Image (cartoon, rainbow, N blue to C red; front, side, top):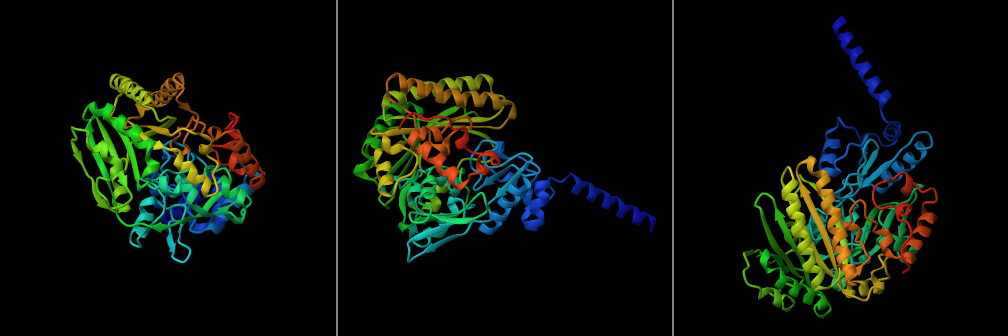
Length: 502
């Protein structure tokens, strides 16, 4: 009996100690949301933390809130804001968890609101809209919509989250037909800093509606996205692998493709070249997509004449299958950084020189396994023309008259001892490409938020008019600056500085 009492006493002391040291913000949340708040000892906590795409994003918050409806988000935000009056309550908001850098959608020793359980996809046939939860990944959207013969503009890799991609603008296979992903949102349901749940569309809160089309997480927590849907069956696409020695012919075809997308807006291409340390080989890979079930369509004619193809996976298939092919491997430490420049072969050729120099540097210094990828895609003016037709966004692409190229430097590595090296390679890649483009007057200031590195400033690249507009709207909907001060992750208006005149 004495032994049993001793065990009970010890257990009580342990629990009392745990409660005493528990984060006050988490305690307040648990009182309101009960089992929707999970702690490190809970398997749901570990599942959430380890599900981030990049290992660098797998931080350890004090607790994780897992809402299942907008009202739960409202309670969480109000509770955190109220508790912050007596103790700091910083928090993060996680949608798909695909942004690679630590602190973007997770937080160390704060609170993470993990929206992954809010992942419903519902199609309204009468309105031709798809309503999508903020924790949904694009593959889950396509699994539902493919069966119905409809689609929406969305991510090209299935594991990318709906929320982050859309709030950052969002490119897709359909951009030349419908504009960017954000341009196809007809309504955002949003939880504001004071806990109110509002709709933002062209009739209700139209200024907030505009700001969310590129303004990221500066205004509230989006709890539902309603997107315009369209009829869509199978499409043709896949990847084609070539020797790296074919780059000159590839760039000729790429520049021509980018200048002629408007002539056949069903075509889309992503090109990339990748060095893998495990094979000590660089390959050039094209991802072709034609959003009709038509093999070898005319826009790809120049590509299809390039000799030396090693392999391809080209086929007629659906979006669920196709976006599964463009996945990036989990289990790495990852870095993104990006630059935009005019559609020009000289700049593309320079990117290869810079790429080769970075590979040589990595070979001489890296400790563990790694991959270096430069990825390019066209950003023709037809994209922003559709944006304007659909009411506009805040990205500022409509102020440019040139067809552009968007480049992503995508680095992945295994060993934490290589963190500094690959940060250096990431940052210097973009600086050197931009400097060269500027030297021949082919540079462009736009920074695509969904590809931006932690130290880049995409909001400033939207131009002074849009940045001023975003700040005015944030002041209106978040006067206490909750999403500037309590939510440090992402790209903040407070840190955007001054932009060039639009």
